[in-house]
Structure formats: structure tokens, C-alpha cells
Length: 209
Image (tube, rainbow, N blue to C red):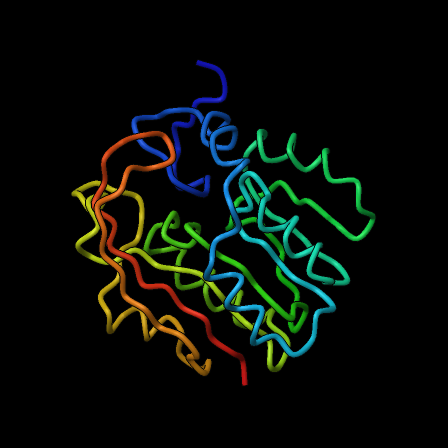
């Protein structure tokens, strides 16, 4: 199969059984914008710049553009996401194809960082460095929105390259930010590729001081 992924840690978003990211992106490209992002925008004070981490089908990047952000940058490691990016013709949109580890983050650059179903796809070694770099790249009063996987998530198996959090360690990851929303969620719901799954999530919206 073309574009199949062997190294999960290099990629973002939901992935199981080595099914290609292209299929994931095709199947999610018509999805509605996630309500957590819509909610987060109620808390933004400035809309000069936003970052969409692990942008995938780029639905949320498009939404941020439609909501008046002066510039929107999306980052994803996958070729299929890069193809989707070519469909967005707005001059204030920028796509960077990079892994989390390679993506350059400048201090105090973003009014909003969106990281949904993205952060857990980093191994424990990369995660702490990434989260600190993301927090650093938020402007003062900037909003960080996203989620972490909880320890009861069914992807939490021996040998997984993903990171899973307890309620306490999820709060620790957001240390230094003011937490506006912190919602734990558990549900049994199929993945975008149709596999049954038990989801355990910590959804958050936080503000840099």
C-alpha cells in the first residue's frame, strides 16, 4: 500500500494497523470542526497568528482562517496533508511538512496553538521537550487548546510509541499556564478508519500568563 506508515512517532493523528494516512485524511476531510476549538476561540484576545499542530485534513486550519486569524501555520509530517495544503489558496496560510521534533518553534509567536489528537503521538522522550517548546512559542495571553490520551485509552498497550497521561501528569504538562477548561472524557467510539476503540481523553483549553 502506498504511503503506509511504519514509524508512528514520525506522524500525527489516529493510526492503527498501519493503514495509510492518506485514507485517514480522505475520510476526515469532510468532518465538522471540533467543538473544543470553537470553544477555545471564545477565549482568544488577539487573532494575529495561529498554529495547527498535526493538521491532517486541515479542516481546523481552514476554520481558523475563516475566523479572522491574520496568519495560520499548519504542521504535519505526511504527504497527504501537504497535498491538502495545496488546495488552500489564501496568502496568509503556511504549511510546514515536518515531524514534531524537527519543527522550529520561535518564542512568543502565536495567539493560539491547536493540538488535537496530535500530542499523544510523541513518545515520552520527545513529549516533554515538545510541550515546553509549544508553551514557549505562545504569546502572552495566548491560548493552547488540545488533548492528551489518558491511561485507560485502549491504545495504551506495551510497546506503544505514544504517550498516555494520568489526570495529575496531564495537569503537570500544562504547568505554567492558566487552565480555563480541563475535561476528562471516556467513550467507546470507532476511529476515523472504523476500528472500535475505547477513548480516554483529557481535553484542555489553557492561557499563557
